[in-house]
Length: 243
Image (cartoon, rainbow, N blue to C red):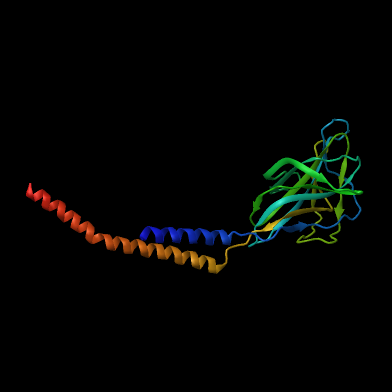
């Protein structure tokens, strides 16, 4: 009986914690806004060696607000494609501590499959990510790989932005000349994902109650078994005296 009650308590506790971790529907968590028609900063990695500047990258900062952790599922950037490049892969990273001349600390990065939208301004997207970000300030980049062509990152004035605060403090990296140079602009980038629901106070109360119940059951079991243990010790002592 006791074991069955313990198992029930553990199952209910696990279910409570899982419910507390339940995520909300996927959505755009962050978007600096639509392109304002300005495209002056290279953002590509040429694998062919055909272009005079083989690589350049743009970085934009974003903030995860207190009390609302994110689960990032995709990153995207709006670019003008001078190719067309037919982008199929992109490098990306999420970092902390960046600043002028400072690459910061890379928390997550990779080279992933990417899609390129149609039109004069293409949206380059890397999907299939699963990254949990606690509250804090971060930087991100998504840089398409090309084969002899260039793409230019579009800047934004904040039209249709979502959860963004424009600071005009993007960073631009170009190995030959630009060492994470600050630019007076914000790049048109975005992040898809879900807000991770934080446990409600009622969930914590229920969990604490369940553990308190488990402690009570443990004490009850110990009290119930104590007379049996005493009787068993007495029986062993009697057998010793009879020998």
